[in-house]
Amino acid sequence: IWEGPVFAGFRAAHGYIDFSASSQEEVLNELWEVKVHAAAGPEEGFFIFDVLSLQNCASDALLELPEYHYGGMAFRGARNWTPEAMEVLTSEGLDREGGDGSRADWCLISGELDGGKGGLLLMSHPGNFRAPQPLRVHPGMPYFTFAPQSLGDMEIEPGRPYLSRYRVVVFNDEWTLDRIQALWDDYANPPRIKIVKGGNLSTGGQ
Image (tube, rainbow, N blue to C red; front, side):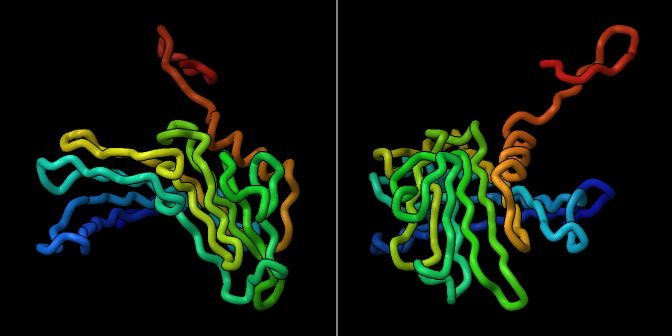
C-alpha cells in the first residue's frame, strides 16, 4: 500500500485454481496493481482508478483458455438495476442489447441509487490483447465484461506474462458523451514528455 500527492494505491496477489482437475491445482498467479488518482474525489462527484493485471502460469504447463463469452475484466452493478432500470452505453453508441457481442473501447452502465443517479465507466486500454475487446453484456442482470476469449481460444504461455490494463471511473449524476470522450482520450492518448539536449522539457514527444 502506498500514497502520494498524485495517486495512492496497492498491490495484491491472487491465485487461480483449476477445480475441474482431480488435484485442484493452482494454474495461474496474478498480480493486481490499483492506483487511485487524486485528480478526482467526492467534491468533483467522481473517482478514477486504474487496474493493471499481470498473469503468469503457476507451472511450466501451457494454460489454454477455450473460446467463451465470459471472462476478463467484469463489473456487476446494483441489485435494483433491472434491464428497465439501467442504462448501458458503449463507445460505439450501442445500448445493452446492441452492445452484447460488440467490440468497444469503453462501456458505461448507470441507474438510480440511494440519493440519486450514479454509474461506472470501464475503459479497456488500446494496448490490451485483441483491443478493442469484445463485450458480454448480460441480458437480465446489471453485469458486463470485456471478454477477449469470446473471439476464439487464447493461451498464456509459461514465462510470458499476460498483461491487461483498465481504467475505472465511478460517478454521480449523468455524464455527457463529450466528457466521457475526453476521459477516454486522456487514457488512450496521454501527453508524453521527453528530455531534449540542453535539459529543456518538451511535450508531445515519442
